[in-house]
Image 1 (cartoon, rainbow, N blue to C red):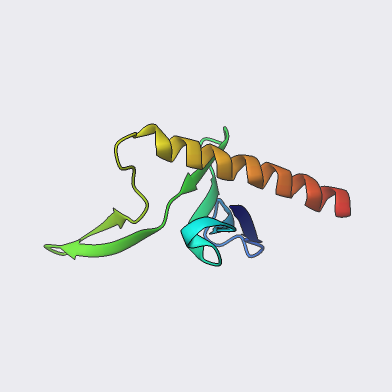
Image 2 (image 1 turned 180 degrees about the horizontal axis):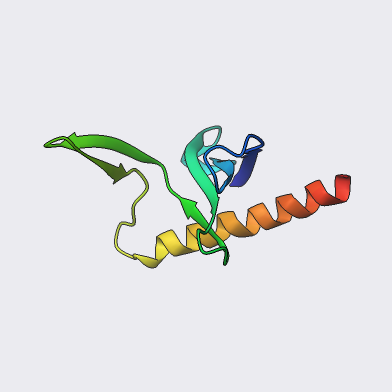
Length: 100
């Protein structure tokens, strides 16, 4: 699996650094990608966060979201994926800085 990034050069919405996609390179998902991840600067300025793909819906006029990538049994699986994406983004930033 490879993570690809699209920088948020416009600064809108504020705090969003990039969009991320997971590109699958082997197995049954080979040749497919999962889009909809977002890399965000935390509001308190200490670190970064990853949001997962989600679908929005309304209940009694209230907007809610339904996560599309959820753990089967191990809730820590999302944390591992979040850390994987953040590590890949840190490496991406280093490559961009070295290219300048």
